[in-house]
Image 1 (cartoon, helix red, strand yellow):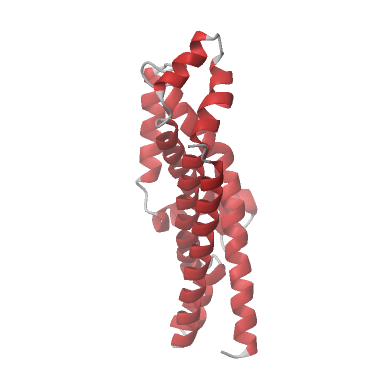
Image 2: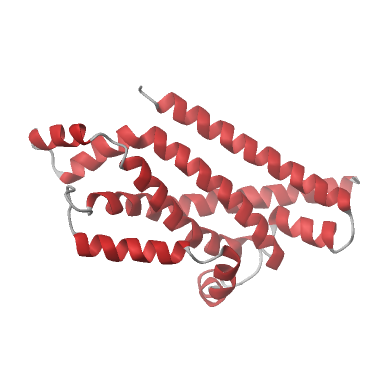
Amino acid sequence: MSPDMTALLLKALGETVRMVVIAMLAASVIGIPLGVLLVTTARHQILECVPFNRILAGVVNAVRSIPFIILMVAIIPVTRLIVGTSIGTTAAMVPLTIAAIPFIGRQVETSLREVPEGIIEAALSMGASPLQIIWHVYLPEAMPGIISQLTTVIIGLVGASAMAGAIGGGGLGDLAIRYGYQRFRPEVMLATVIVLIILVQVVQFAGNTIARRLNKK
C-alpha cells in the first residue's frame, strides 16, 4: 500500500480504538451495576425483589434482541440530540454504548452467579450488609470471570464498530467500505481485516492475562 493509505489505515485504527474504549467505559458504568442488580434482586438473594428483577430482565432481553445495524438507525434522533451529529466516530459511540450495556449486564450476571452460595451465607452470618457483600464478596470473587466476560464484550464492540463504518461511523469499517469496497481495492480490504484480527488477538491476550493474574484459585 502507498504511504498515504498506510496513514489512513493508522488513523482508522486510532478511531476504532477510541470508539471501543470510550463506549466500553461508558457502558461498564451502567452495565456492571446492572449485572449486580440482576443477581441480587432475584429470588432468595440479598436484595430480593422478584417483580423488579423480572421487569429489568425483560428490558435487558429486549435491547439485546435488536440487531446492531437496526439499533444504530433507530436511535439516530437520540444520537443527534446527545452529540449533535449522526455520523462520524463520536456519533457511533452512542449506539455502541447502548448496545453494550445489556451484554455487559448479562455477562457480569453470569460471573456473579458462579460465586459459591456458602461464601455469601458466611458473610450474612457475620452481619455484613448487602452493599458490603456486593463490594467485598461478590465482585472480588467474580472478578476473574468478569474480566474474561468483558473481554468478550470488547471483541464484540470491535466488530460492531466495523459495522458502524458502513453508515459513516468512521474507523476501520468506514475505511474498508469507502476505499476497499467502493474503489475496488482488495489490498485495502485485506489490510483492514488483518488489522482487525491483530486487534482482537491483542485484546484477547490482555484480557486472559489480567483474568489469570486475578484468579486466586
